[in-house]
Amino acid sequence: MTEGRAVKGRPIPMVDLAAQYERIRGEVDEAIARVVHSTAFIKGEDCALFESEFAAWCGVKAACGVANGTDALILCLRAYGVGPGDEVVTVANTFIATGEAILLNGARPVFVDVDPVTYTMDPAQVEAALTTRTKLILPVHLYGHPADMKPILEIAARHGLRVLEDAAQAHGAEIAGRRAGALGHAATFSFYPGKNLGAYGDAGMVVSDDAEFVARVRQIANHGGGKNKYDNVVLGTNSRLDTLQAAVLRVKLRHLEAWNRERRQRAEAYTKALADAPSVALPRERPGARSAWHLYTIRVADRDGLQDHLKAQSIAAAVHYPRPIHLQPAMSAAGGRSGMLPVSEALAREVLCLPLYPELPFEAVERVAAEVKSYCGAAVARA
Ligand SMILES: Cc1ncc(COP(=O)(O)O)c(C=O)c1O
Image 1: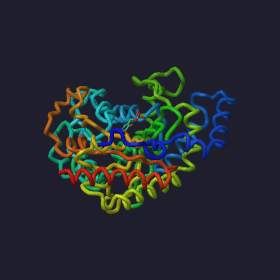
Image 2: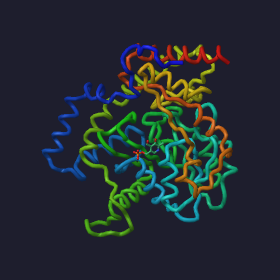
Image 3: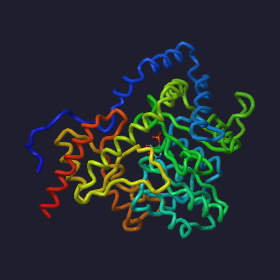
Image 4: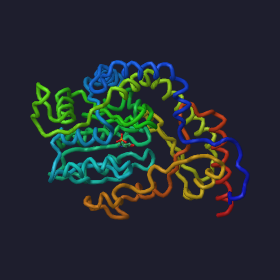
């Protein structure tokens, strides 16, 4: 038991955005001041520049900045014409936004289970989930690890379907040298502050090689606009990326590759330090795939006990996610039942994300790993 034990060392947070700001303070402050002085808060030049820079970074032809990653998904489904009566095959081991976007468009999510090693869509289950109503396949690159896109794309091609990547957590993830965003027919990103590339507020992006598709997204995201400001050609909404966020993101994009390298070094340090941890499953990369290491997620039977133990040592650890989305009341229209997705449901009970960010000191990695080992070792001895 951990209660009553002295707290050792300084608190270790899950992420430390203040430490990141300290590294780029001059550049960010200058970029923000430039936008404020220009007063071009909506559709300022940083928006278009960030779109082209991020598209180039991903290795695709076109991008459209939007208000957040949830809207990016909603807008993509609308632009693909997904609506009532349609089905979208996706996973339940994800953030709720993936499912919300489908239901909000009037379509039905059809959930398949995930692979027990990478926690991403199990391609072997996809074909059986397809029906004549299937409109789209929506894999999620969870924790920064890319879904197994090759077999998913092959199935999609056989059935004339599109594959939309939910890359909200995967800026810089790769398969065979291609980055997330360039792996499917289109992709959505979130720039929520704690993401590998995070804004100073909400922001998101749609990317694709299909420039016409991206133009449709842009039209819907900007009140269904036509050539002139007050032409409203299709039913749209307001989901624009704001200029201040674009300016901050342009600064941060210049550092993303280095930051992802630093994340990888810390992930590797965890893997080394935890190699002999009893009864702990460590994250692994599929051969040919490179994770963006958004999160370092371990799997342990007594997850809640371990989380409490770490908390007592002033170490933050987070559960992404405590309930698979097919069992969320908000998703009840999708008809999810307990027991339907055994791997996703077990993961919800057992996963724990350890602190991981580019500035995380290696001594902190060692301390977290030592606490995980001591708790799990004692648990094995107790059993
Ligand atoms: C997998 C996934 N999809 C979608 C989203 C939604 O992004 P946002 O929070 O920017 O709306 C998130 C955000 O956490 C996410 O993790």
